[in-house]
Structures are given as structure tokens and as C-alpha cells.
Image (cartoon, rainbow, N blue to C red; front, side, top):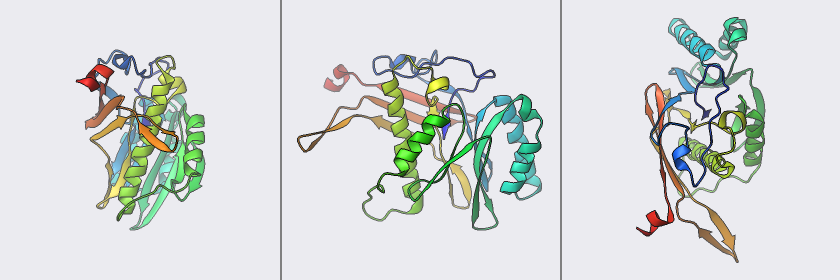
Length: 256
């Protein structure tokens, strides 16, 4: 799930990274990025949502859903009913996608002011929301129609889900790098960070403390050639924020 800096009016122009300008990766944040609001939210052990839009509306609905979860077991129907009847969301619009466990084994996906876009063996059910939904729809349809990801050894469902999520996030980060620093992130690209949650050990949990190493690969005369790493990004949670710490690698760095 993608995150961008939460702003009240959603009009702030934030530059995406350029390979030669990593210092401007997140505007005025000076490398250590600690100002990103979490947009994947754990409502309860049995429910996780992701939101896009007004942070005011999001804060209100997150509080209300957590209160509901204390009173009763959440269901997709109850959550959608609350969202559709919440008049505050007319003034502070929010898009929501999420999963909820109903009973012991019945997982249900739901979305509000979002678009259901794809079903496939590789990605399962996909719904997209936010300003980047058109690009994301094209992206997941392309990835979802590709052959299954090759695995070695014994790979469980949770490991495959985490690996697939990390691969997709890496591909999107790479897309931002190719965009240079001329594209407004919140208007045209995918935001400043990438989050994911998974159901494991009886509860939804965040996947955190991830380090992405980005490089290029090409095939020349039947041989696969890899470049030196171009950028390293470490993501970790510092509640209630997401922290990103990028490291740019130059040729001088690689020689050293």
C-alpha cells in the first residue's frame, strides 16, 4: 500500500527522487524522512485498512472504527454501512480499501470510494484508490497477467505474499527514480513510502524494517548484467510515523 505525505489540502508539490539528487528525495526533509503518516492502519487484530484523501476524514473514521471494534466484531457490511452514512466524509473525502476476518476463516475485502480492478492467481483481489489509481490499475494488471513468480525450496503463503509485496514496492520505487525530480509526487506518481500488512499468528501486522537495494539488470548477448547498486532505502516504523532513510551511491562510493 502506498503512502504520501499527509496534507490538509492535498495540493503540496513534492518532488520525486532523481538519481543525481537524492537529497531532494522528500522535499526539505534532509535525508532522514520521519514525516510520513501511516496510511495502512491496523484497526483491530481482525481488520486492516488503507486510506487515501483527507487526513482529517481518515483520522475520524479510524477512531470510529476502532471504537466499533471494541463493541462488536467488525464485518465488511458494518464497515461499509458506517462509511456510507458518515456525513463528515462529504466534507473531508476519504477512499478506503481493507480486509476483515469474519468468523474464524472468512476473510473479506471491502472498498469505499475506490475501484475494484483485478483478480488473479498471483495478486488475488486488488482494489485501488487515490490520485494514482489509474497508473496503479495498469501496473497491477500488467504484473498480474505475467507468469507466476519462480520460487526455490519450500515457500509458504505468507512468505510468498511478503516477497510479492516487496517486489511490487521495489518496482514502484524504481518507477519513481526514472521519473526524475520534475514530477509532482502526489499528483502524478505514487507517494513517499510503501507499506504492507499481513495476517499472521492470529492478527493483522505491519511488515516493517525493510531495506530496498535498487539496481539495473539488462540482457546482452544472452548474458544478464547487473549494475552497481544505485540507491538503498531503509523503511522502519516510528509510531505514528513511517521513517525512510535513503543512501545514494556514486561511482566514487563504489570505488572506495
